[in-house]
Amino acid sequence: MKAVTRDITIVSRLGADERTLAFDVLDGLTRPFKEIPPKHFYDTEGARLFDEITRLPEYYPTRCERAILEARAADIVRDTGAAELVELGSGVPTKTLLLLDAMRAAGTLDRYVPFDVSEVVLRESAENLVERYPGLRVVGVVGDFERHLGALPPAEGPRIIAFLGGTIGNFPPGTRRKFLRALRRALRPQDVLLLGTDLVKDPAVLEAAYNDSAGITAAFNRNVLAVINRELDADFDLDAFEHVAFYDREQEWIEMRLRALTPQVVEIRKLGITVHFANREELRTEISAKFTRERLEADFAAAGLGLRSWMTDPDDLFALSVAGPARR
Ligand code: SAH
Ligand code: AVI
Image (tube, rainbow, N blue to C red; front, side):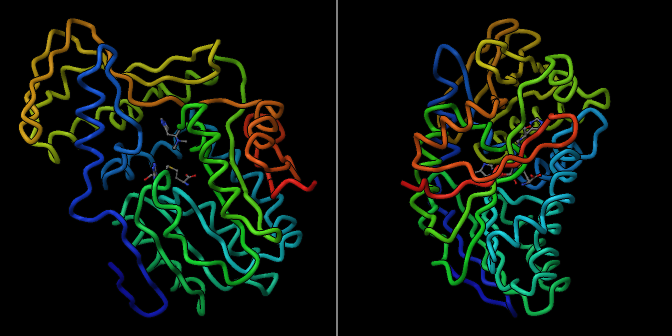
């Protein structure tokens, strides 16, 4: 499906036959250790809650990544001569403005290609951006970046593919490398990957970021149950689950879970299944891997990518990397 208004084209790969929530719920809630992949957080309410998270005092990644971009966006744009910016998991594109401003200042800005599962947020941001940058063409892709990278429009000029916010950390390690290989295939020699990664640090700082005192992360976490209730005609009682987030020091990742406060019996009518939770049984909803430079370089190397630039905030909490096809 394709719709064009003014300088905006939106390509949707999530059609009415989209079965992934149904598949993921059936697969993930009928296992001994229950799990739902984090992409299902982001309905309109989930995207709004995530946006609130980014402004919380405890949630440092967004602030740090913005600080790095404020300092380095002009260098990144100068080094690449980028005319187009592809942004995977674009969400509400606020930090993106720093890159688009730098491209406009360099006189190269031509096209922005946001890619997200969240169609409402993508359409709103496309409208805002064509207002803000006269002459900018926006080609939005509504899809799942794990399955629909092929829907990206062919590059027309030097291209930055940005994957910001540390979202790469939400993939399990094997999937992460597979995804990086797919990104490598999408890059021509003149293109680069701009990747945001949260870094390994004091577990107390990490755990505070995912257990904020205002309870926004808890609401974001429980929202996945509201998505399942609405989309699959289920009857989860959101108040019967508590938010859990902890740092796993061996895996070097944060895990978010929902823990049943009492035994629960949940009907998921569209799937025709009944799911039982024992007292205090947990459902994993997200991992958020934390990186070291060495780990990331190893991941890049395994995917045929080479690190070209490593930029951190002054406290070394977050890193932004520029990577390109490995030079032999
Ligand atoms: N880039 C923004 C938003 C990060 S939140 C920032 O740095 O603040 C993660 C975003 O990725 C959300 O907008 C969510 O809808 C999107 N997302 C998560 N999984 C996705 C998937 N599999 N395919 C496409 N988009 C996805
Ligand atoms: C989008 N992603 C990088 C966020 C993270 O930190 O892993 C999602 C999030 N989960 C809880 N808080 C924020």
